[in-house]
Length: 367
Image 1: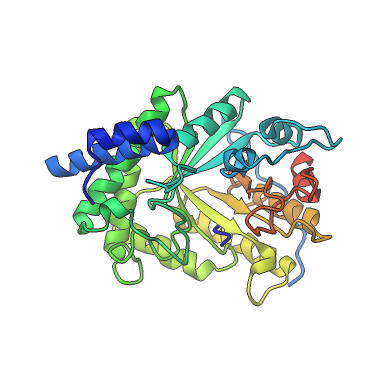
Image 2: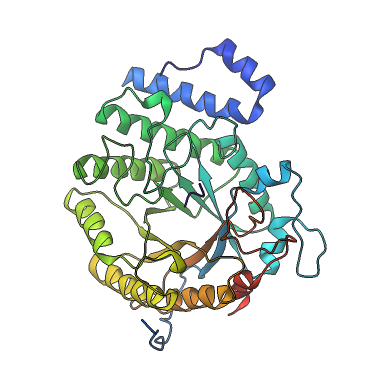
């Protein structure tokens, strides 16, 4: 979701560290990367939820809260259901959530969503006893269906060089997290890669083989550092099953491995659908994907307008459908940036304008 070439020299890194500590670590990562490259309708009644296998992880209920540190720096305050100021992570737990999702940008201009910022948020999540998903965008800013822009430091590389750079960035970022004592349960290799990533070389509609190569190299880098982490390939528009089939058939044809099919669903924005028919189509799509690829699905992004009277019903329906996926259930549901109230013109958070959880958050309290 998106609301809206030479490695740095040591002297520059020192100045950067003193002036912009959040950017220092991403620049160091870029330096390491460069050195490595140099060297080398109405809803039907849901079926009963499938019982998880013995020892299977619990169904995850979480949120992408990557904006939290930036909002806190802008003096935003988060409040619990009683209106008392609270730490956001504590509020999420009170609302029934047990996991967070954090995006990682390569070298963001202001440091937000860089590796240092991500480590700071992941430490807070871990201290709160929450599970962690990492979402690599493989860009210096937003990567989504509208844009999959190569990082500036990699813009001159060919496909083979981009694959090396992607793997190096993934590995270096995860090693930094591991050194900080953080172990993610899930890692996305790309964000909403409906038409691939690292355009134009990795645009799936023009070069599926390169897209698959990038996924393969990202997968390998994750497993090198965290062998037990589940690797997610993430595509938007849950209701659009044909696009999912085209994308994942292409990955399978070219031998790209993945552990989980990640899915975005924003039912009120689904063209040609009511929210109910969008959820019904999403349900059918999830059932099909599990049967077709033999992999679990997960709703890694959901959302609804914060002021929609049916916001709670929309989110509740998505959670219920995810729990009832045939041969499932899905692995979990993550709300995208629920804490965003009055922020960057984003209207699909789940907190009200006083900074309190709204009906969309209450849906996660349901068992």
